[in-house]
Image (cartoon, rainbow, N blue to C red; front, side):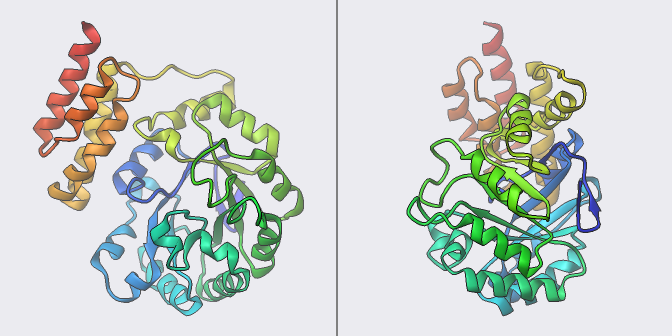
Length: 322
C-alpha cells in the first residue's frame, strides 16, 4: 500500500507511543519487520521555542525508514511552523496527533480534544499540508466519549482537508485503553474514504492482526502496546500474513539479548542517564509472563547501569530453569 508517494509493506506498523517509540525501539521493531514506524509525539509549541528535548525526538536513523514524526498542538500556525522545522529531520511522513487521550495533552487543547474542535483540526491539516512536501496523516479516535461519536464526520473532514491517510484507534477519549477496541468503527471509516485507512487497537498476536485486516478491510494495521517487550511480534505478524505460519517467541536467552540491545541503542542515542531511567519500564515489559515476573519487575525498577540489565537477564534465566 502507499501513503502519498511512500510505499509500505502491508504487514504491521509501530504506533507513535509517547515515552516508548524512541529511536532505539523503532530501529529494533524495524529490524524485526515493522513496515513503518512513527516516533513519539512532539510538541509544536516546544519545537518552535527551541526545546532540545523536542528536537531530539525528531531524530531518525537510517536503519528505521520509512519513518514518520508526529506533531501535536492546537494552533494551526504553530503546527505549520513546527512542520517546517520537523522536515529538517527528513521524515518520510508527517503525522498529526488528534487522538491522544492523556489529560496533560487534551486539557491543553491538543490530541483528542481536537475532535471537539473539528474546524480547528481542519485548519491544522490545511496549514501543514500547505508547507509539507511529504505525505501528511492524521491519527484520531472514535470521539470524545460515547455521547459524541463523530469519527465518521471527522474522517471525511480530514480527507477533504488533504490528509493522505488516517489512523483510527477504535476507542473514545473517555475509554482511554479499555474496554476492547471497536474494530467496526475502523471498517465504517474504510467504507467511506478514498484515502488509506490504518487500523489501530488490540493487536497483540498474529491472529489478531489478520482478523483486523479481514474484519475492517483497512489498508494497514498499527501495533502499539502489543509490541512492548516483544519487538519480534512484527516478524511473527509478517510471516503469518504471508505464509500462514510463524515462529514461536524466541528462547529466553535470545529475548534477554534483544532487551540488552535495546538498552545499548538507547544509551548510544540519548545518553546513559536518560536511557537507563527509561530502561526500567522497557525491561519490565520484557519480564511479562516469565516465572517470577513480579520479582523481576521489581528488579527492573532499580536499574541504573548496563550491568544491572545483565543481572536482571541472568536472574530471569535462573528462575526459568528452577
